[in-house]
Image 1: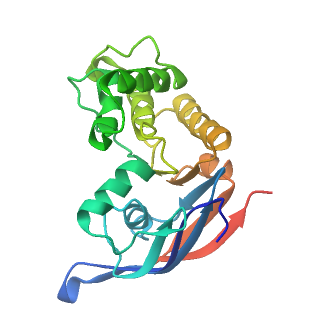
Image 2: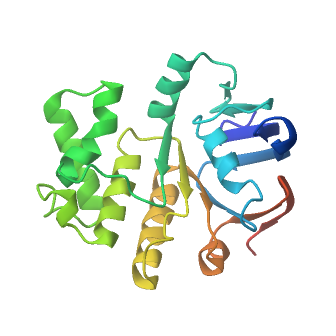
Length: 232
């Protein structure tokens, strides 16, 4: 396997629900994410986009198929090892930032680092300051997140997703609640990080302008990727 491949999935299947209400949400999905590339997943609501993202992010398990991160199979690891890999290798950005509103911006960014336990307290604080500076919030690290604007909160969420220097960044409608200016600012920030630090970014989006700026666009329909095109 190419050492520049950050994540692969092969033949991923997922059923949701039970008995008569059972839905075949993913039908043999395969993807390869190389370092330094940005991928968009597009398609109508209910086609399986978010289900795929959650499985790739090790937040849900596939019923069939395989996932590998940096050439290491991770699909069938026990829950505690899955949690460790998820925290160390994957950064997840949600449509809603899910910050702890009474925690400062810096404290929110430090949460994943505390879970991983690699850095001492001063190291975590230094890393959080660096990341907040990178997203343009270097002067607002001590401010409670509830006192930040929506665009600022989403940038804190981006910094938090990068806290443990993940190989793969997964984003579920990361600009869905932002205005046009902040949407493009947030996307440009992620695009730059991917290019400069050799990450892979996969984002679910309904924004055709954002999708058009990605290196690859994967169209989903009824649980399948029906078209994958590379930007010219």
